[in-house]
Image 1 (cartoon, one colour):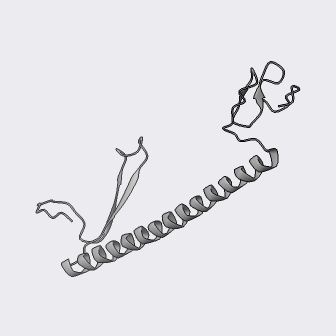
Image 2 (spheres, rainbow, N blue to C red):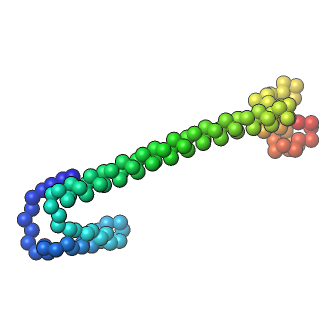
Image 3 (cartoon, rainbow, N blue to C red):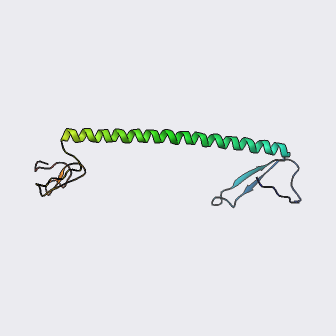
Length: 124
């Protein structure tokens, strides 16, 4: 909160609104002004601070839940990879030393026949 003292002529004695067109690519920005006493200003400030603190707490909770879900999904994905590897009896990191073909990340031998897309006719 910043305070300053200024003497300005021509301001209305009741609440008023201003429109500023110098913001956001020429779109107008409307500001509402109201005259309040110092204690009302502090009450408004404290209410805004509490609102922001609740927002931060809600975001922290959401981030924590999202991180937990991501960790669970990664673990599930790792289990799925192991299941697929066991079913195919081929490790995705395994390299065949007897073949002129190399293993791709999907376990298919990359060769001239299929280009590693998984339909290898050479028994891969």
